[in-house]
Length: 314
Image (cartoon, rainbow, N blue to C red; front, side, top):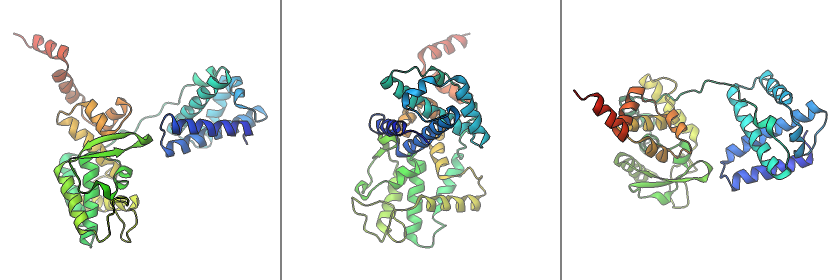
C-alpha cells in the first residue's frame, strides 16, 4: 500500500509523461504499475509508506532487495529492466521537485537480457504471403480488406494499430499517409502503388459506408476491425505456406525496414519512415548482415570512400 502523497505524485508524474513527453497510453499504464509496485515494496521493506522525498533515503541494498524480490516472483529480466527505467524516471522527476538525492536509484544497473532480434521474411516469402491472403476469406470484400491491411503493413512499414486507426478520410489513398504513431508523434509515409490499389479495391467492395470520421477497415458487422482477426489471417497463411511462427503482422514491419535497407536505403530515412525516436531501435528492426552495412557505409561516407579508393590504388 502506498501513501496518499506518493499516489498523488505518481498521478502527476504520469500526467507529465502524457502531456510533456507525449508518452503512449500503454506506456503510461505500464509505468504506473511498475512504480506503484516499487513503492508498495518499499513500504513493506522499510516498515511504512512515506512521501516522495523518502526516495532520497533508498539505499543500494534496498534496490537490490527489490530486484531480487521481482525476480523471485518470476518477473523476467526484460520486464525488470523496464520497471527500473520507470522507477528511475519517477525518482528523477521527484528529485527535481523535492530536492532529494536519487543517486542510489539512478546508479542501479538494469539486469542483462538478450534482446530478441526481429525475424523478417525474405522478399519472396513476403510477396507470396500477400498473394495468398485473399484465399483465406469466402467473401470477396473481406478478402480484399485483409489484403489491403497486410499490404499496408509491409508496403508502408505500419504498425497494426496504425493501419487499423486509419479512417475513411484517407480515401482515395494518395501517394502519402500522415500517420500518428506512438506518443502521438506524426510522420509522413509514402504509399506504394500496390498498397493504393489494394485499398481502392477494398473500398469499392466494402458493403459498409466508409465515412470520413469512421474507421477505414471494418469487421463483418461494420464495426472497427479487431487486430486479432488480422493475426488469425496471418496464422492461416503461415500454416498454408509453411512459414515459421515468427511470421506475424509485426514481422511485416521488420521486413519492410530490412528489405529497404538491403536495397540501399538510408538508415536515417528508414528511422523516419518507421517513426522511431532512436536509431538503435531502427537498427534492431533491420536484419541486414554486417557486410551489407559496411557497403552502405563505404558508399555514403566520404572519408570511407576516399580510404577505399586509396586502399585499392595499385
